[in-house]
Length: 94
Image (cartoon, rainbow, N blue to C red; front, side, top):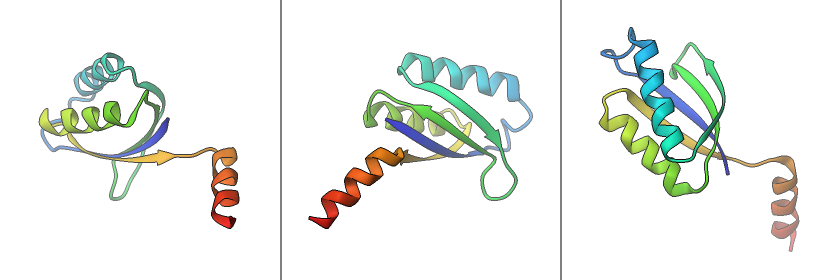
């Protein structure tokens, strides 16, 4: 399942980019989550990532771990491809 991650950086980790990303990548690998893209943004979120997770529990585990490490906060949003959306529309129509 793909997820879009909306993330913020904690003040303590904002200047430690290499260390923070190394820790996060290692945890993603351990949980079987594939990092597909990283985008740094301006505004309420510091970054937007796209990942492919084996299940919702792996994604939740990463979000909890990220916050517990003091790295910042993540909101994870399930991301559906167009085929999945079309199937959902057909089911909704009855």
